[in-house]
Length: 292
Image (cartoon, rainbow, N blue to C red; front, top):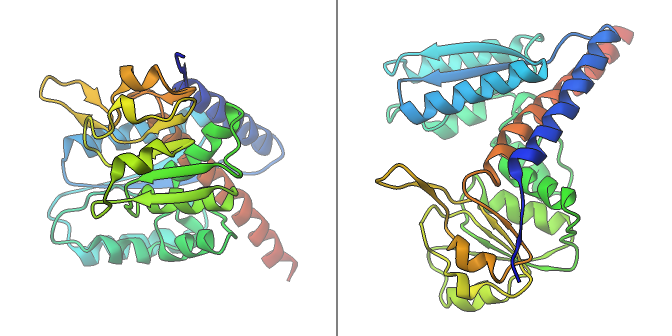
């Protein structure tokens, strides 16, 4: 068996084109373009690349990108004041603060300051709580991106045993909640998990989001499993590697998402989708205010 590749770039491109068409149709109907405020603090090279890519994706989809590039010396209070202003601005639908933040700024305090209705990253505690209650509106981007990938390749998690490696707030935990909502039986493995191999071998759908190259030997993969490698590490030679031994796993899996080009592009696509969804909701709220 040789697994079919899950082409995250192609799927993300389809989603982004669908968003662009929806934005175009809404503008033709008299609605304004969605608007996303992106906040970048400092000069971290990786963060600069991520934000630049997000801003380019916005432009290609017809989404207005409002840039706030701040120095690394920006105080926590200055950042919170900026977020407050973006929260009050009805012309802004989404707010993205690029993480990580400088050490002198409390990331959780910043995330909590963002209006949940503009939380397009999906990190706010209320966003998380609504997902846990199975009533999500805006959803954590990488997690819901994986769900969309599975839908596009025709894999339904309902009734399947899904194993998630990693319990971070960014990927592992929200992904486990998404899979539960989809009807899967979910096992979450983390740094205190024993007998990791046994858990991995049981997975009909395996998602690894640890960031440890070679964590999962290909021989552990259950024959016919769907493998979603979310972990990504830049090696000393500049190449990118995932958590799963790709070539060996590919000989056992039915589907596999490579690194790079697998899950990664879906995160940005879902950021755009969240911004569009927030715009539609905000437009509806504004119309209701006018009626009253």
